[in-house]
Image (cartoon, rainbow, N blue to C red):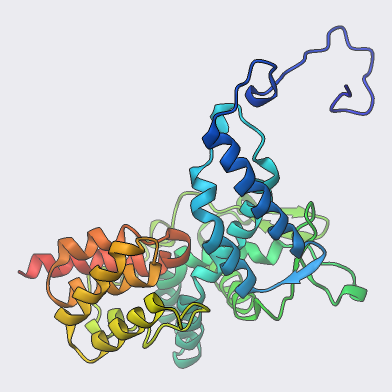
Length: 337
């Protein structure tokens, strides 16, 4: 037995704690033993990426493959720690995946910024209003530590597992984060005492946003806040359905059916596409692309409640931007009926 700390400074008492699955009377169930096998195998695969540069493709692959396993395991309040060797490195990958989920929205934000006159204060404010939530999430990527120059300045995703990422892989996220941080805090600091939101650590400025948002700061500044209840064109919603299925299993029977369903959708044959999506999900209810196809098809058919129900099956980390837009669209469309 050994203590958590290498040295004990003459303690008066030493407490011992045994987790539930470390106790002598713990009886593993068949389900527990099966999950141990799955978690150990998953951990072994995830840790093959230790001491290497991980890509967005790798992150998406790992999260897609093992997310259902992660959520099927006992939670932290169960006292079971046997699965930490899987959950800890997996969570590191899943945390980084949130940046990937915003990729399309970030591309749009950069395009909007380049195509509009940001020298006009109201135009800049509208841009910040539009991308405030994603900006407050993504700008944290600027605080990732980097390795030395011998390692080409790789981002340290998780030092415990030696997960690294190339800044080039997250180029647009970093570009957006720098742009948002510069513009956003310059506006906020006009209304708040600067030091209230800034902390200096080793020469790096860390921003700590409050629960307040931009509109709360400028509500008395005679600035027109954009209407958040404006409907988007249906074409923008349809763009979330891929033209065809391009994943590794696209040549399998289910992959071919999904590609066929996408093609029918983009040919405006919504009823036929709907039948194919439903048929596919009867045998593969974890098919995320099929769920987004089903949700948008129901939307295009005017079945907004069914569209929302289908969208609830989507993974939030991957489709967060879509879900935020889609729920509002369905709500507004329903009011027009």
